[in-house]
Image 1 (cartoon, rainbow, N blue to C red):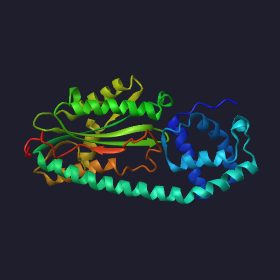
Image 2: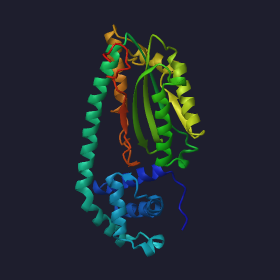
Image 3: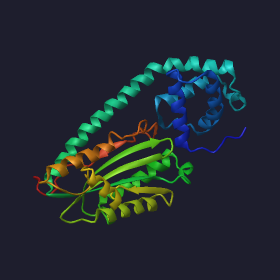
Length: 300
């Protein structure tokens, strides 16, 4: 039996949604059988025990293993009885999955508090802070070529460049990085960059340069969205919500808008954007260090 081509990210998202729907009684057994037939073999083929999976994914693997012996895994047909057996086994993991969902929400709240403190420190320290936001991901034509390991490798290179503050990251004073995973967008990064406003300007151009750098890092697989485009800034300014570009410390409205704009990284409008698969010890939310001996105006 041949398996249809599907990206790793989309496969993981589909399995996560299936398990969630089953445990929430939002899907009938006939549709469960259909989805098992589509998802089981691809996930078994892609599964790597060295990676960290969301509990919904490990519950799926464990529950199918209890139904299917390894000798017959490629010949399995998901009829009524083995599908029902799978669902019964899956119910054992319901409490663990619910507890993990609570932990995710609690971590988002912690990240939000940390972000507000960090942004307040940065905005109050510099008389002018140039804020650039760029969303980094992969194009629809290449997303099936990107595994979590590939994504992790690209991120490592990106972090190295940010740490060196070279090329488009010159005069960079702060950064916030949030990793996400969407059903359609796959693995992607929300990146917030803060530059010394007395030394850098032209934020729209910087956003473009950062996006192009990401495309170079990914060997042409990557795509980007420049959050500092002129059109977007005009729209936000008309609404009184512009919180990117040049932010002045003496302007309380700009300061508040900047903090509000940054909160998108911890509380996105979209749901279910958390990573469901990670390389071991992979951090999904990080920000720079404010209190450092290198920062001008702080005690060494």
